[in-house]
Length: 179
Image 1 (cartoon, rainbow, N blue to C red):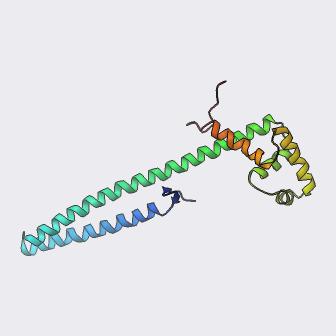
Image 2 (tube, helix red, strand yellow):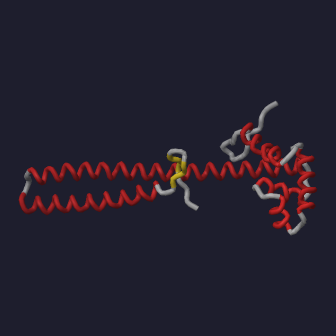
Image 3 (spheres, helix red, strand yellow):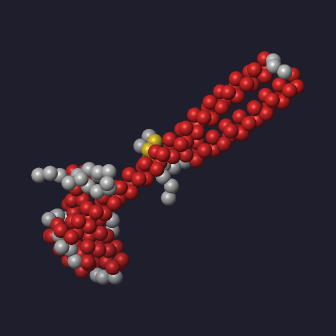
């Protein structure tokens, strides 16, 4: 899966590709104009047309350099976004693992809890686990009881609150709060 950077509230995955295509096109145009300048200089020497083409070519070269720098910066931003997502995913996984251990969830309860966090309904969890919806309800009830949550929304909120209250550190784990 490719990455992109935020642009007007949406993640753009095409930006680096578009800049890359523009970079190549500008390079081809620059090569064409340099060739034209050389050929014209050889034929006619320096004249107004040759000077104009040379100035336009220099501007095009500057544009090419700017496009290269912007493409490189865009690729770096994309890499940074991807790294941030990996850090957040790792931190969230660590929070989940820590809470499940703290609440002493059984392996079955932990699996039901994880599927619930992923947004699966009781029927979907039962189907995935090849168990009855009643069994899943009992296990989910145990999870809620052990976690102190009253319902699915409260359970999910426990993890979201943890990540909001303890921002990510550079090491990829949630920072602990003193106190």
